[in-house]
Length: 116
Image 1 (cartoon, rainbow, N blue to C red):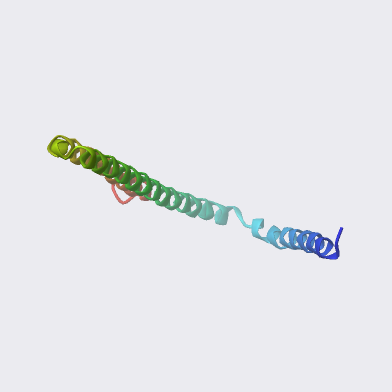
Image 2 (cartoon, rainbow, N blue to C red; image 1 turned 135 degrees about the vertical axis):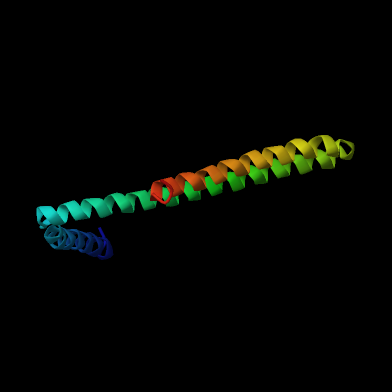
């Protein structure tokens, strides 16, 4: 084993021991402070959930709309005469995909407690 690997293992072990020793005072709190911390933890988790809901909703919607538009344009390029028959269902599909993105936005607001 080379000296750099040994130093890496020693530094990783020292860092984990250092972190363990410093993190223990964090858990020393009174019961009242624990209740307040619980309330803020729940709010923080709701905020994180809202962010994830928006992020996944927008990501999925953007990917879905991109694939739908690409497929429609490919179909139109193969058969230009079918453009009107392809364009209408494509726009309907894009609207439905966008409605799911807006639904994730509403769910995020519910998670934040902005809408009662």
